Length: 140
Image 1 (cartoon, one colour):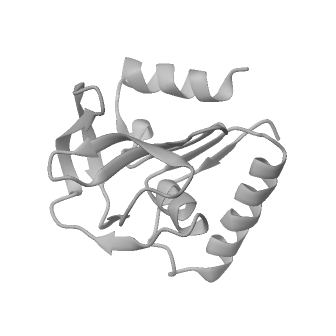
Image 2 (cartoon, rainbow, N blue to C red; image 1 turned 90 degrees about the horizontal axis):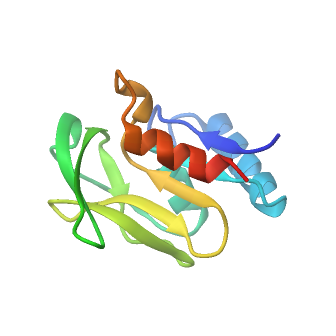
């Protein structure tokens, strides 16, 4: 395996086998220096594994909204989630927030571990910025 994508889907806690399988895969990939990308639920599981709690959010399901980077770069992304990270996990930094202050993207400070709350696979055609990001994460 050359990298790991933790995909979106049901809420954490609904399917214990999925949760434990993803935790195993995350730990294996991290221990073997493989790049990891968590998409929506995948970012949430990265947060939970790294001791961050989730909190319920409103107005983040089936909408497009602005996300803002630390450098005040604004982008529009889709949103399909009921939960957000309560805070940034230790060892990570926030790349993007939503306009209402929710964490929309994180990255590990030293390892190639990234999380995004939007779904690049739901954009047709794919957004150039998302393709560039995925190439940067998974290409050596």
